[in-house]
Length: 343
Image (cartoon, rainbow, N blue to C red):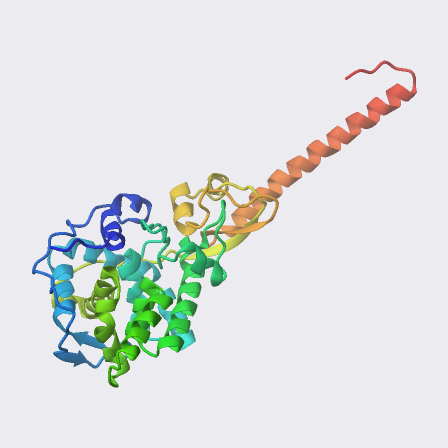
């Protein structure tokens, strides 16, 4: 049996890394499948389910993933469905504002299981699994203090901008998803090879299946995996899934001085540090960048507490500074009057 690609394997085996976000157990062995994977890349479409947005084609590769997600991978998939409650509404609002299909929310599911802490062997990071170069190209900050690929809000903006550009380039959501996984140049080369071979006209929806054999193994599985996830997630009850969706945590921003630790903000707000880490996963060292004020997310209603806490600290510092100035002034007077002084 052909092995599961490393990136997908990492997604399933990374449960221990996501404990603070609630994804705290491993998925089944990804090499175990309910049915053998088809060896042929020639796909005969059996049915097209007319749901809004991304067309959902049911064929042999898709059915393999449907069986996996509803079979041996059911515990993992159920956790992903529950975690959708944390970020799903936010992602859908952003998709709606761009006029993009809401079904694309499930790309974050197959990329990371909706975990901002996901990290792949290819150094892709965050809920949308963006590599450093693509992240920077779409305006994300990635440095020693901040990795916005792990910021659910900022990373979603960048990922959707990227997907919008990919769709504009290829005119097909299947090809856009393939390019998101393999890179736009890899998909463009596959299309050029097809054109050079003199292949006839085909629909945009069918193009992916026709160039499938020219793409990396991971990408051959990626689009069927995405389609299967969409099918199940939109009708989870029909597939026997019973779960309680996680509730999103309301938050607000407060600006703090550079070099402020999340531990200090936790003390000021009376909030567990783990909660602040979950709200601010992009602060990879648990501290804001130095020498500049920086916004930190805190639970709703806690921003004023932070401001008041810093106000008390500042008042104490001002009082100490005034005492120090008074002491220095008295010392200067004593020296001018001939009194002894030393350091």
